[in-house]
Length: 351
Image 1 (cartoon, helix red, strand yellow):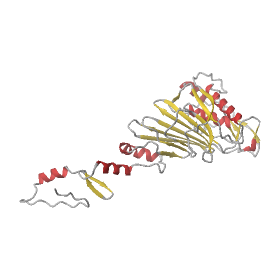
Image 2 (image 1 turned 60 degrees about the horizontal axis):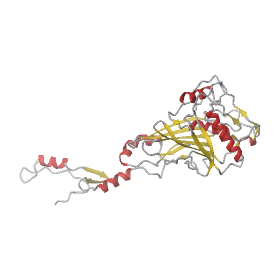
Image 3 (image 1 turned 90 degrees about the vertical axis):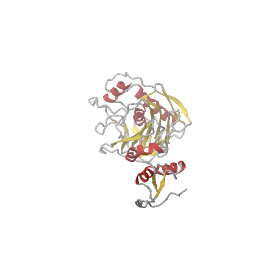
């Protein structure tokens, strides 16, 4: 049996009228030999084994060694989905980061920083195609920066602002019980203060607490169930992992500098099937009324109320609405945990 040539192809010579291969037969042979190009070599499908083809495809698949950008995922996902396992790969957009979940599910990563907020959404179709979307809201004006020591500033609720913050389109499950990891607790507050801030923040959302007379007509049920030992499925880089557990957890943990909080919500269909929240352990927090210590501490209840808004599906408010709880800009010593008219109405409309 004649060996097929592997290497640089040469133009076939035309057959002679006698003793050669008929042109029609040659054309049929050409059509019957597929060419696979890789690494500068051309392999015929007759000589390329299934394992060789699989190895070639695997070489083109992305790995977990680096984070993928949103544009890269959207541009190449259709090609990757046919041959690659994308679950667990990292997608990063600014301060928000998430690992690709399993097919048929999604994850929403929200990061609140001292300079604004970022929302990253990663959804995976049943066939494995991944789509990613990012939205960033910049910080509001830095005018009126805090003095070294000053009393708390309570941001007044603008009841004339009927702006409704975006809604993810996914609803949380009621009742929704969650735990607080028992340690560590920042040195600037006590464990009792942390637990109280957590309870009150959840209640602010449960009762649609607002200063505009909007009644509580929502069936929201976030319930603190005590302390636990498990960590959130959130890495020290602020990345939502691709394999969430069945426990909703709030914890103080290491996060990137400048990040106040990260909330991860995992979705399936139109339901938020799990969520976790991480609050930056290194941030100076205050949980009591009166004077804001050090002039550079952040109000824990306000930040947690904002994060619980994400837990039930509220996204960041636009830049032109700085009085809203869901606006991703909190100054040190600022207390902003009372919902606006639009925020309260949005929760009532979706629950």
